[in-house]
Length: 160
Image (tube, rainbow, N blue to C red; front, top):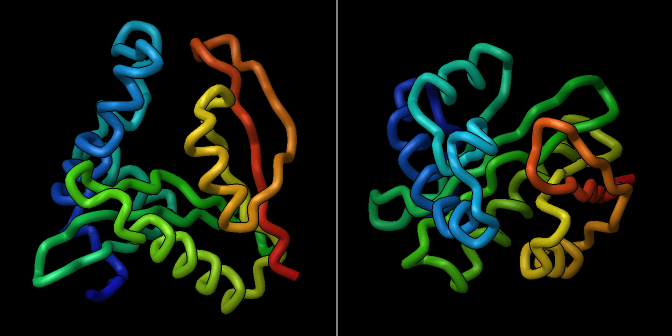
């Protein structure tokens, strides 16, 4: 098992992991290209390349040379980091991979001197919310976005 820093050469593999890993969420919350065209279940290589261009970093979880999950990290300023697109392929869930990717990302943020890591999730996604609470995140506000068919729950982990 290893978690590696992904490169732009991994963009296609990252896109596939993100898209496949988020399809069940799209189905559960009735999301489609019409009501949420930017949902991660529709991720493609161009989106990942765009993320890299914006300075977002990706980490891949690999086992026996196969990538089974990934997570993105974005740092908009010197104090805050965003944990984005945590994705674990469905057949590999419930094995601690997501937890390891979150832990790795939080350790990386601490190393960079970040004080807070923030996430945004579908507010009604109770299973995911409870997973993040178990990992030390706390709720940090609810927001409605006119272009989204759901409310977004913001959560944070204060690293200091």
